[in-house]
Image (cartoon, rainbow, N blue to C red):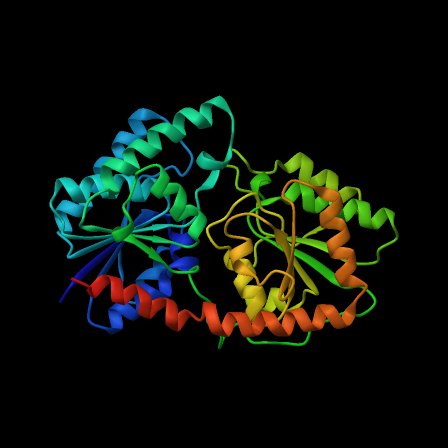
Length: 372
């Protein structure tokens, strides 16, 4: 029995992005473990026969003593379990487990780069210092023949190649974490007297939440009757989170409605007319491939990850990042052209079937796990 250990930042991210792969591994006879921070979702993972090892991990903290503790927590899990395969996702688990598994001589190591995140997007002096350190640690941990590195888009792969973090032989491309097409079923786009324009993501500034709210304000001023909704929570551990005061201001002004986090994204997305994600950079956003599967036209930004989640001009519209007026115009154009909205949704479903089916994503992962 092969032992597979996932290292992920938090339990809820593992459930939303990697659980189907772990369930399939259990079915194939693997002994599957997950090491992550516990936010109360552990029992939901364990019911599938997966063993969870809680570790101390702050997603955005830079306290040196806490980071050292996190590294040693990961090192101890690696040493205790002696896995045949390590698979790490998100920045800190990738960096720390790559170093730990290399020190312990674990032969099969798989690392998923699910977007470059705040460290690579933010241009502040602090972020630049952290970026240099993270790039050095990535290079130290990943640049060796026992590591396979999965990218969700070619732009992120190019960044890592230019920084000499990985070589071409290590690189694998898998477009996103997949979508279950039997759960995310195609449905007719609702238009009606009050169409719903939906932003579904954590309420982070670098996901374009402020641009979305400002575009909603512009369109309301123009007399647009649509309802603009935010589906997702504040993430106050993240330095880019929208603050509660700003969220309340947009709500009280009547620009947006905040629906909070959804436990049933398929049902929630089906209520939308247009899906919007004006992010600054992504790996490959799950909400957009889910929207495609359900058959919704998309407005998103012409940046790595987002542009890879649609067929530009076919299943969705690309607009410049960090700009409100082009975003408002693109939303308005879809709301006033019902036929275009429907057609883009139908072609989005075709894209999901051809490129994002979870079965294909799972198979590609097992090809990597089992390759010599």
